[in-house]
Amino acid sequence: MKNLLPLALLLAALPALAAEKKPDEPKKTVEISKDALVMVVMDPLAAPLSCPCVEGYAQRDYDKLAAFLTSQLGREVVAVYNASLPAALKMDTKDRADIVVGKHSVVLFDGKRAGKQFRPVLALTGKDGKTDMQGLFVVASSDPAKSVADLAGYRVFYGTEDSDEKYSAAFDLLKKHGITPTDKPETCAACSDGATKILELGPTARTATVISSYAAPLLEGCGTVKKGDLRVIGTTANVPFVEAFVSEALPPAEQAKIEAALTKMGTNIELMQAMESLLGFVPIAPQKKR
Image (tube, rainbow, N blue to C red; front, side, top):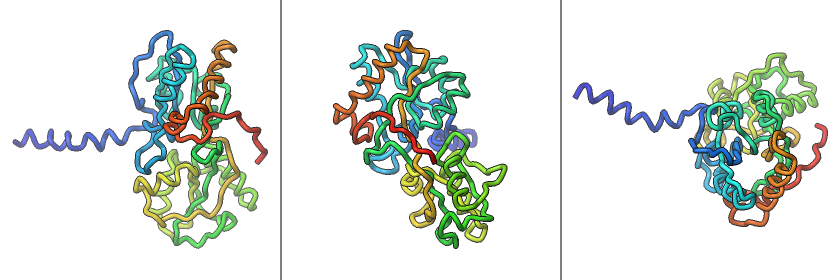
């Protein structure tokens, strides 16, 4: 019995351990034929990369999109899920990525890291029809700060460099209020990390963090923070959210076919519902200077 107890405890802990996968770990193992097109999904609202904490939100079904593209292109399209493009290329796809769908700034950043060239072709609309997002400056609800202008002298936790809404756009907003960001900004890879840090440090520590607007419902929904724990005191300028990219290694005609097939998603109501999208993929709007 003494020998069985540690085994029983380990088996009981397995579900919890499985839930603590690192972002770079593959989320799904699939067989990819030589002739298939590979779609790497990095969208943080894709079901395998998120959690079902908020009903009807962050559960985008890219397997259904892959099946739709397969029918449109007459060629198998396989969806592979990973928050990191270099990790997906190394562990999941054997260096193959024909289509990539993810946050605009993250895909561009990871493409450079992986030494691959990808071209953004279309933007994915959300349930509200929008294709952009913002960074939200938040503080503990009891903190005295009322606006971003009050953050002078505060310790701020930003997102990582690849997330424009939590990094470069956040710096721009601080500068507009006459606040110069520190030379060595403190960063957190996940919005939940920054949120829990400022709550752990307490209201007298004078801290703030920047979270992604799309992540705000998940922080409360998943129980990372309690309702009312955090307060938004500022919003960055809009930045692009989820976009579809095609590999520039593909022949131009093949790239055009993929773009046309993605556009047709807007004619399939069931698919748009599965993808939590109002209008499907639409042309990318010109970006305004921040």
